[in-house]
Amino acid sequence: MKRRQIGLYLAAIVAGGAAGFLAPGSAAALELAINPVLGLLLYATFLGIPFASLGQAVRDLRFMAAVLVLNFAVVPVVVFGLSRFVANDQALLVGMLLVLLTPCVDYVIVFTGLAGGASNRLLAAAPVLMLAQMLLLPVYLLVFVGPGLVSAIDPAPFVQALVGLIVVPLALAALTQWLAGRSLPGREGDLPGVGRAVVGRRVMAVMAALMVPLMMVTLAVVVGSQITGVRSELGSLVAVVPLYAAFLLVMVPLGLLAARAARLDAPATLAVVFSGATRNSLVVLPLALALPEPLALAALVVVTQTLVELVGMVALVRFLPGLVPAGASAR
Image (tube, rainbow, N blue to C red; front, top):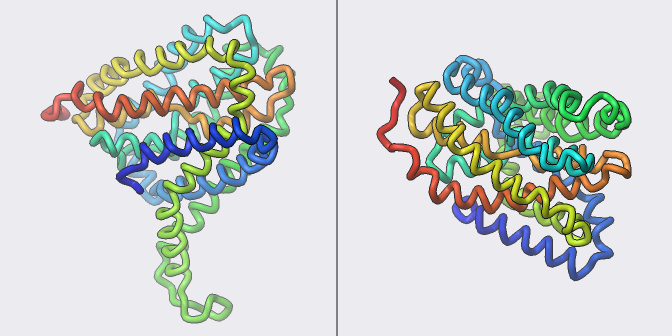
């Protein structure tokens, strides 16, 4: 499944879309399933993050500098420019800002590895990227849309989504890794004859095996729950499709320049480009769904970005390695 995961993800999107079209009444039930499925997916994703190596990731100064500058200094400038085309529609604007200002921490690692990039370095950087976007996204929204609109948004659903989908899965993943790293034998009260470390390792092995199926289920549920809304609002959503495509096209050369400035080798360069181009749509979708009714279209704007991005990722996996000289190395 890992070797064929791109095709499987596209098939899941098609299946979810077909289910949404053929049984539009299922949209409400599918939408209720988004948070539980996504929480499980993020738990599995966070299990792959080497928390024990976080210090090593921070010490990877040139790579970290390139990724952070690209995502939190260059990307906001690009997004601000692109967002001016929909600045007169608050729902389109907020949805576009939510998704484009947040770098991906899950399937970007998959696509980076498929293209021959340094997925291990990007995996180690994931906690830093996650923390940075959680802190900076409110600041970007305040600057780009103004305090009036931000103050009109009820923070309670945002906090619930943040805790339920980020903090809890992240804490559980860190706890599971800690248990898996222990070598203590089973004590009284533990599972008979099974040490804590064995339990932790088994959980990690099972979740690793479930990563592709969980991603497929998540994509199918998200698309199936929102596809009828996308169809009904197609006239409005079509405005953001070329902007999402433009974002991908612009971020490739900017990522290459950032990696070159940091004097990174070819695998690290690919990782930087993928990090700059791939967005955190699945994580911010619950935030978009929690917006008040006047901004309800923002959730569909986020889903539309997912559909555009996955097509773009397939193209990048195929063509991006040809743009990075295989012999490139740090100087």
